[in-house]
Length: 180
Image 1 (tube, rainbow, N blue to C red):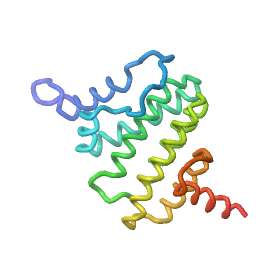
Image 2 (spheres, rainbow, N blue to C red; image 1 turned 135 degrees about the vertical axis):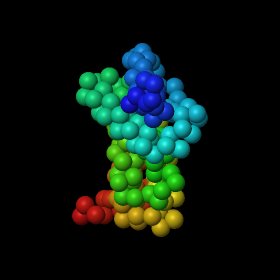
Image 3 (tube, rainbow, N blue to C red; image 1 turned 135 degrees about the horizontal axis):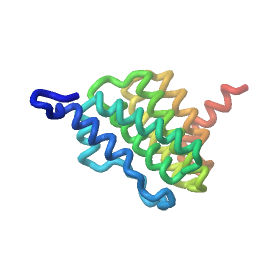
Image 4 (cartoon, helix red, strand yellow; image 1 turned 180 degrees about the vertical axis):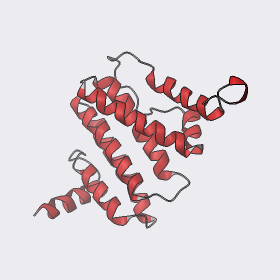
């Protein structure tokens, strides 16, 4: 972790900065007022560094799960939102998206939706599901992991409200058809 002369290496400093950013403890009772969780400079930074993005996703996702269990929903929503955006960066990144990227993204979105629904933010939860399905459909159109994308879309469609657009409803129909 320490480089020549006892100074931190650049990678160590980046990791420390990520930890500081994501361990700041804003008021747990803060209302959900936005659906952007990462600022543009952090999005750019994570887009340029795959290892830091993976670490950030894992850290945020784990914190979101822990806070969900502790029923600290407002803070859990913030962490889950960061996990979703980081998973999206990894999904849309420079590498070709793989099954693991799709699963990581889907699990993160499902966590955020669960938390939003628990706080009675049904419209925002449905919007998150619809936006995630749209992102996944872009992968499917590019011919990437069609089966994994189809499965993810079906899982997320069940979490969208009944007023969701037709492109979401078709996945809900496919999912219900597979149950029978």
